[in-house]
Length: 183
Image 1 (cartoon, helix red, strand yellow):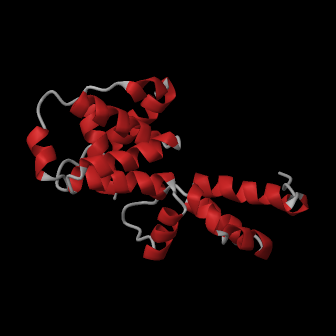
Image 2 (cartoon, rainbow, N blue to C red):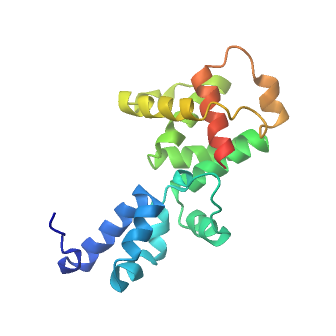
């Protein structure tokens, strides 16, 4: 297989490639960083942190706190989403948590769109964000939920546990738990 000469591209295009790779996975980004000094310098730019999917890192791996802070400062959608989940379901700060989830959903972060829509539906009967679901995104969320169905309950606040009834949609319940547990 022939290699693509990325260094022959304009620097702005190289930066876009690095950002796309950062959005794919940490492993890919660090592999790309190891390829040459120029790409490593592009990957060190702060704006690249906006494109990481923080939730794609395995639970057992510890992410450096500075990296998480940088992702939050760069308004990384996955980091904003995690803050929203934590505020809403763990600290019972519903208004603040919902605002964070909405920010991430408006950025197009798939898990945030799903969780925000289902939370609005369950707690307030609002179906505004349902139109943003695609068949493909629902299928991906179902696969995620099924792979993490062991993660029920230990990190939720008392108010959420009190609201938990048999009327919860199981897919919604598992996805919230899975997302909180990943945090």
